[in-house]
Image 1 (tube, rainbow, N blue to C red):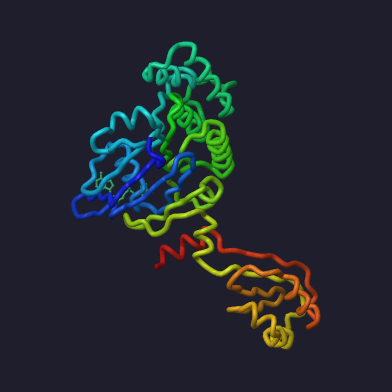
Image 2 (cartoon, helix red, strand yellow; image 1 turned 30 degrees about the horizontal axis):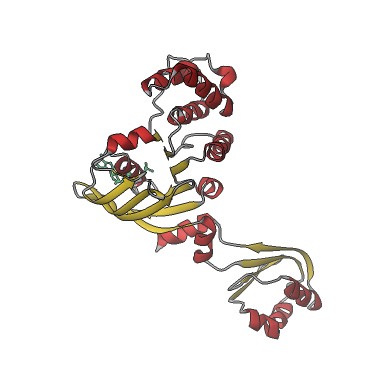
Length: 313
Ligand SMILES: Nc1ncnc2c1ncn2[C@@H]1O[C@H](COP(=O)(O)OP(=O)(O)OP(=O)(O)O)[C@@H](O)[C@H]1O
């Protein structure tokens, strides 16, 4: 098996005059949660459909688990799980019967089937409610069950298309916890699409940002943050007078540490730095200049700022 769970080279897909995916070249290593981040209509779902071999590319290549997506879509679907737009659950059946149905379809032997269903329902916190009809469940519970369904045959890779869409913040956080636990327990590679930045930040070791079918950036959320802007030092207190700030700016140490911007609001001072440095000398100088320092925070750009700056480019 190749070391990458997913590899695409200049992958393209158009629908008439719409270019849904434009020369996507991407490698997703095994064993990570990869977050594909983009606004509505940016090409995330199209990418998943191409990777599963549901759609034919217009140009380019894609491999999933070492299999060519054009020629080996069956092998890919055997070895992957997917939660797409519809959860694929039978509302009239109980949770347990839903999983039983799919486990039989996967031809999982009886004893294994039972233990796997119990394991997945227990880990998702649904075992006690296994006899209830799914139609009576909340959307959050259905999403958990749909992920359990996608994991039944223990695939090494799963695709989750907007798994928390439509969930309230509490249900979304609970589902994220479940996904995180599942990844740790089963060592599965996850390809997840989202436009929720907090989700990407919490779950993903790597994110790719896509806009209008084009991949704009790939990396760990921290790497993307460091590309997006300078770290900042925020100092909260009293006495940020013009004199104090002038004095601070005139200090040789300040010139050395290369402050690029100083903002002064009434009760806080934000200093934009080219790199993180110890806050202590700056605080000492401010105190000498008569400032009463209450709190010092080191800030780095949020993934949201990264995302917005990429969208504006
Ligand atoms: N079957 C189709 N026929 C025509 N156009 C399509 C089809 N599927 C996708 N598109 C177009 O391709 C572009 C990308 O759509 P896609 O569904 O991949 O975006 P997305 O990032 O998943 O969006 P969302 O977050 O809204 O689900 C959009 O302009 C969409 O209208």
